[in-house]
Length: 248
Image (cartoon, rainbow, N blue to C red):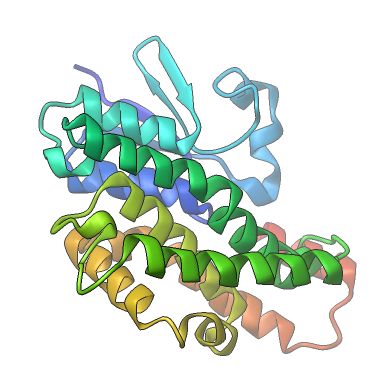
């Protein structure tokens, strides 16, 4: 059986979730890097894999699939070695996980990704940040973090829904929260400092998926360091910043 192909950019939070899941569950795969900063996701070749032009995407034989949540569901269902806690056979528990994943896209992801884009990433991509978009995203992010704690991390639970082990929802949401590292330590702590349950839960997911979690996030921390160094150079103009971003 040939390994599946995973098309990903590790700077992308859903890409990291899929890669970590494959590593943890010993799913044989070939990682195909699609460099977002070089617009490789917009090439005709990649659009044959995913016509939406987004990562991650997978190819399993003749079967192609995109959207990270759909990919995680597929991998958890098709590969027999995947532990049940990732995507439980119990339909009631599975439905609860599905509800979190659906909520994720229009809440936590929209808040975190939009905030990161309009504060940290836009200047380095030669784009014009929108302070209003960043302001609205910040409110949505704060509301989402409160929702996670009050609805799915009640009591002393280690993982979402009171589970003793992580699900694909835990992995997907924690990878999203990790994107806040791009904003720098002070800003990250401003959002997460008051959310002890969130911080403990993130640590629990890291431990449950170690060392693969750390390995998949190495590039993110490299980008963080480079962006901080370049931001300190006040003489850089938009053109220079765009060139910098293409090398991240």
